[in-house]
Length: 158
Picture 1 (cartoon, rainbow, N blue to C red):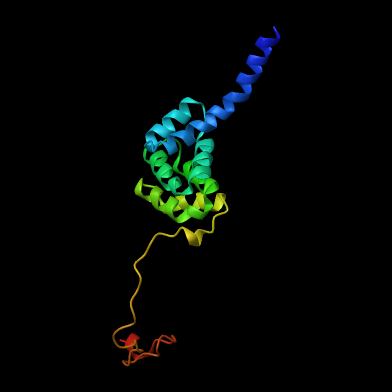
Picture 2 (picture 1 turned 90 degrees about the vertical axis):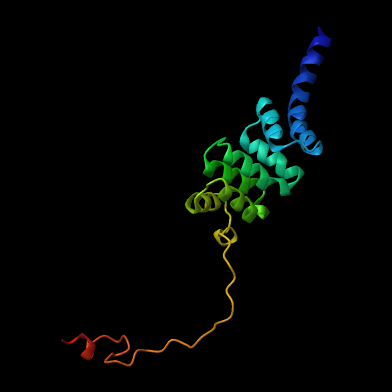
């Protein structure tokens, strides 16, 4: 009877360790993200747990995990982004870009970032860098105008 109790107690203690090792072993074995998620979900690990385990092993994989979860609609975009941002806040820009590739709107990304205490300026959509100023500077018009100071002037009359 004591042996049975020992086996049951050991099983209870080992089960969480096994679940945590599944994501790690899949990453070590270089399994695709679909296998990592499918195995973790089969082990009844929730999405937040999956993101936390992936980020704990290699934060560089968090954008890939975001892309997989978002494109396969494993939950709402905002929920997926919040989990990803919480798991790997230093990868916020890459996570946001991965979500954009799966159709996330700027509003969804911003809401998730704010909910996860991510500075919104770090996740802005990439824009092209502007070059130096070229051409002549803009001047005020010379025809019957008060230069935008109101009053109507002669250009309005008539």
